[in-house]
Amino acid sequence: MPELPEVETVRRGLERLVVGRRITAVDVFEAKSFPVGPGLLPPAGVVGARIVAARRRAKVLILDLDNEYSLVGHLKMTGQLVVRGPEDWGAGHPTDSLLGELPDRSTRIDFRLDADSHLFFNDQRKFGWVKAIPTPMVEQLPFIASLGPEPLDAAGFPEFQRRAARHRRTTVKAVLLNQQVVSGIGNIYADESLWAVRVNPARPLAEVSDRKLRQLFQAASDVMTLSIELGGSTDRNYVDAEGNRGAYLGFANVFRRQGQPCHRCGTAIVKTKVAGRGTHYCPRCQRR
Ligand SMILES: [Zn+2]
Image (cartoon, rainbow, N blue to C red; front, side, top):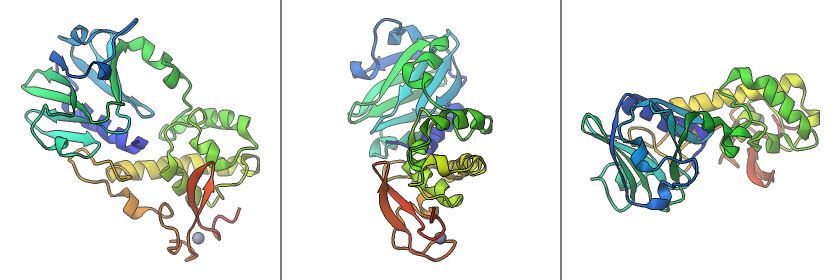
């Protein structure tokens, strides 16, 4: 599953290359990748529409069209988006399809665009999807409406604080991973931001001061921003817009660094389990 910075990398590529393009035809090779039903526009309904914005909400990508509908999509495990045209580009699950001739066996949808371009949705395992829904409905989709604020939006802190207050007896790491409290923080970013502010991942939220909580929200934003700048975390599967593997994990302070010295104090990083997830921390800097 991609982490938020990878999906943001995809969004930025789409913003650069497909916003402003008009959809001239849609070829659907796998019906379940573009579901139709009540409230959903069939693929033919987006033909003729122009793409006016590329947005993201947590890990959901949104392409707004000028016909009051939006294409909403999730890459899931093996999805990738590839543009072929004046400039070739691809991002998502790294397979040869990012660079090869398309459509190929993994292509589920081919959005043909003006200016001799194509936007291909490839997805080997077919868990990903694209739906065309009315733009005002996007924020009301159940999995979007329930999402907490994102750390990348600094103004979201009071809302994060309010939602977190309902989980005072929970470990701080579990709270960071709870998408209804704060959205988009995956395992890597939770561990890295807790190390940055010297908070033990297993500490109950009730023992984290408001000041520390604010620092934590900011640290999550900083570490995700750094990762986006470096092209994503590349947790095995993700590559950036130019098909390069992201570099972030090479700069991680704790994630997958168990047994190696803490960059701050030299103590060996420990791996344990918190909130049911592999958790990395410095037993000295993050004593509590
Ligand atoms: Zn340390």
